[in-house]
Amino acid sequence: MSSSKRSTIIVEHLRKQQMWDAISKGKRLDGRNLNETRPLEIEVDIIKKANGSARVKLGNSEIVAGVKVETGEPFEGLENKGALIVSAEVLPTASPYSEPGPPDEETVELARVVDRGVRESEMIGLDKLVLVPGKTVYTIFVDCSVINTDGNLFDATSYAVVSALVSTKLPVFEMQDGKAVDTGNKQDPPINTVPVSITAVRIGDVVILDPSAEEEACMDARITVTTNSNGDYTAIQKGSTGSFTIEQIKKAVEIAKVKGEEIRTRLKELPKTG
Amino acid sequence: MREVKITVGVVKNADGSAFIEFGKNKIITAVYGPREVHPKHMALPDRCVLRCRYHMSPFSTDTRKNPAPSRREVEISKVMREALEPALILEDYPRAAIDVFVEVLQADGGSRCAGIAAASVALADAGINMRDIVSACAAGKVDNKIVLDINDIEDKEGGADMPVAYMPHLEQVTLLQLDGILTSEQFNECLDKALSGCSMVYEIQKQALMQKYFGNETELREEQ
Image 1: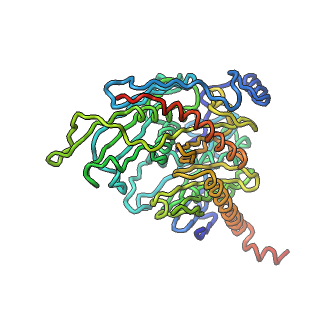
Image 2: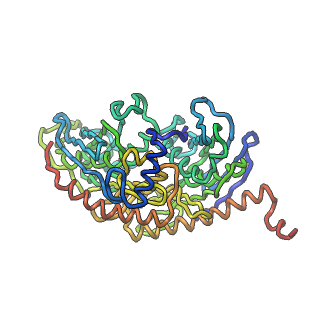
Image 3: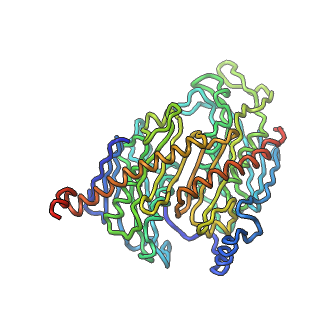
């Protein structure tokens, strides 16, 4: 059952006051401007056993994503499409508050929002990954592990998934005697678009981008917007216990488009490996 | 928009309850609380704990749904709680809990919106202090056209689906989700459509509460 609870980290009242004062003057406690994202570091092909992998650092939030490609049955209702499954896990290493065990609702939301962003944008041309229609298709698993948390896991995880997929080399499977066999050859995945997720949070009346853990502990409401290469919206999720005005939402989705394009150029430059 | 019917006070044991028929959706919601928190360590010293459970009955869908809570239900329970929380004055009930149960008996697309609409009526019925009623409605894209309130069949065709929850009096959006591709113009059109749907649901919610507490609205006016 979903339940309201204390924020994961506790920020002192004085510190909160400092943050509000700074934000109302257009500056943030770490010196960033309101619409400034933290430095993004991306490293691909770090796991040789995976078909594609990436390590992403957004500020101090650190995510490792790995791609594994297999063959299997298609999803019900999507018989003529390959399967793409994105999952995420917050490791016990990630913060003093994360524990091993089944995922809590925040982790479930993280995994589902990231999955939706990648899937709904139709990033991968899954219709090209069918071996026998309705029977055997490519199954692409993208598993993410959060190594360290410092806010905005939604964007960091999404960048890790996209980076890992962009740098993936798919094994070429062939049907032999009714079985899918790995030919040992490699191919580029059919990439249609590069989805980019941008998260904004509202603290008081001010909307800021890419919140740190400290800022997330003080936020009233959160909105994550994913755009594709055309600048269209492909997924949105409002989160946290506060609300937004219509103007704030319209502003947030506009910024997501502009900032998304900046991040997209970074993701497109990634080398192809695998 | 599909036909919406809300009946208040359908679960006798609950502190507040509502039954909503939103097209073919049939959803029962019950509110218990404010009451003691169990387990006790979950209690918050300065405000009330809001707990929310969205659940689909195994017989509510075309193929039987496993009764165990799915990841989808876990997420919907969370977004539903976050959609209702801004409307509630939880500071009025420190160290207590309010439990909201949303049971989908028959699903036909847009069940989270219908559930939120019914749940906020049930919360009002339970006499919880509220800032506003949360109304909810989805809009989406079918055949490249922006339409209000998509049902199950339209949803599975896979245009775009955007559920929105809104507090019409405070003009605050408390839930916004989107899957599917929308251009900027389509997004704005979709948001406007969804908000207009919310206003319609708001009227039905108010009427349902009036019906229970003041009898027929027209009769009331005549008396005045």
